[in-house]
Amino acid sequence: LSRYFRSYHAPAILSIPGKFVTLLVFTGLLAFGIFGMLNLSVEDSQRSFIPDDSYLLEYFDAADKYYPSTGIELAIVFEGSSDIYASREALATLDERLAGKSTKAPYIAEPISDTAYTNIMAGFSSYLKTAGSNVNVTLGSDGWPATEAEFVTALTSYAGFGGAGSQYNRDFILSADAKSVDVVVVKSEYVRLTKQSGDKVIDDADSQIEAMDETRALVSSWTDLPQRFTYSEKFIGIESFKVIKKELFLNVGLAILAVAIIVFFTVASPMTSFLITINVAACIIEILGFMYALGIVIDSVSVINMVLAVGLSVDYSAHVGHCFMVKGGEDKNKRALEALADMGASVLNGAISTFLAVVVLLFSSSYVFRVLSTQFALTVGLGVLHGLVGLPVMLSVLGPKPFASAKDADASGKPTSTDKASDEELDA
Image (cartoon, rainbow, N blue to C red; front, side):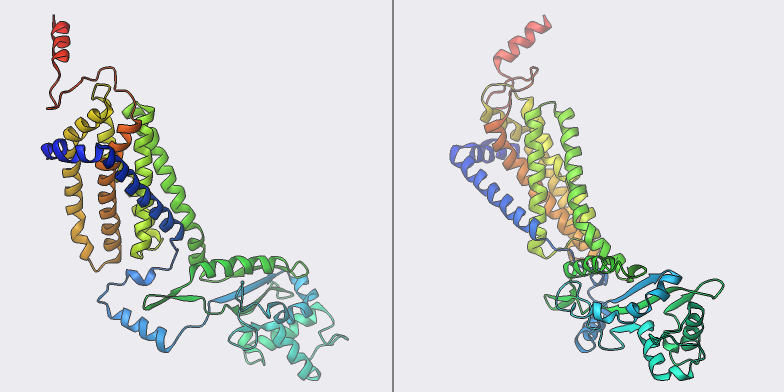
C-alpha cells in the first residue's frame, strides 16, 4: 500500500491536472452536501422503529388506508372563577373565533360538528334558551343566571351525572369550596396534518409545528378572555420536531469547534489545523447531503450519530496533516507525497476495519442499526476520501512550512545525506 501511495496515488492527485480535478470534485461534493443539508426534513419516525417483518406495519398501513385518523385533538383551557362568569357569553360564542382557520395555519378544523368542537359554555347557553323555565335559578336579561352562585349551581346540575349536558362532565372544574368554576375546557381539533412519504402516510412535522405556534399566538391574542393556554398530547412530540433540527446544527457545530481547538493544540500549526477542520466540516456537510439523498430524516437517532461522526471523521485528516508537518523541505508536493506514503496505508487500513465493523448492520431489520451503519459507512467513506485525497491537495497548495525539527526525505522516503551529516555532527 505504501508503494501504491508513493508511486501512483500521490503523483496522480498532486499533479496540476490532478489538483484541478480533485478541487472540482470536492467543490461539487460540498455543494451537493449544502443542498441536501438545507433540504433535510424533520419527520415522525416512530413507525420506523418497528421491524420490517412485523405484522404491525401491515396493520398500520391498512388502518391508514381504510380508517384514516382524524386530526390532532386540541384543548383550550380557561382559568379564573369570576373571569369565567364575566366572560360567559364570549366563551359560549368561541366558535366564531375558531371558524375559517382550517385552510391555513393554525389549521384548526371548522367548529361545525360535535367531534370537531365541544364547548360546555355553548351547550349550556343553548340549554338555558330552550329550557330556561325549568332551571331553578333566576335568569338575567341576557339569558344567563343572574349571579355567579346561581351560575355555578345551574352549570353543575346541567353537566352533572344524569343532567342534560352530562357529556361535558369532564370539561369544567369547580373550586375547592364548590362556589365557583375554576377551569373551563373547550375542545377542538386540527385538520389532518399528514403527507405522503413514498408509500407511507406520515405526520407533516413542518405543518404541525406551524399549527402549534399559530394556535398559541391566536389564543394569546384573546386578551378579553380569562387566563388561557392550549394543550394537546401531541405537543410534546411537536416540540421535539421544532427544536431537533436546531439542536442538530448546534451540537454538530460545537463538536467541530471542539475538534478545531484540540487539533490546533495537537498539530501545533494554525494553517494545518484550519485545513483539517475545513475537511472535517465539509465531510459532515456531505454526510448530511447523502442523508437527504438516501431518505434519512432528522430524528433522535440520526442526530446522535452525526455528533459521533465528527469524532470519527477527524482521525483520517489529522494523521495526514500532522505527518505533513514533520516532513522537511520547501517542496510542498514532495512533503504531501511523503505524508501519504507514510500514513496512507495506516489510515486506509483503519478505515477498512471500521467499515467492516458496521457493514453487517446495513442489512439489519432494526431501524436504529440500519441508520447507524449507513451514517457510519458514509463517515468512513467520505472521511478517508478527504484525508487521503482532499487534504493532501490542499496542503500541497496552502500548507505551511514544516516544523523546525522536520527532516528532508528523498524519493525513497529515507533521510537525505545532508540530514545524515547533520546527525553525525550532532552525535559528535
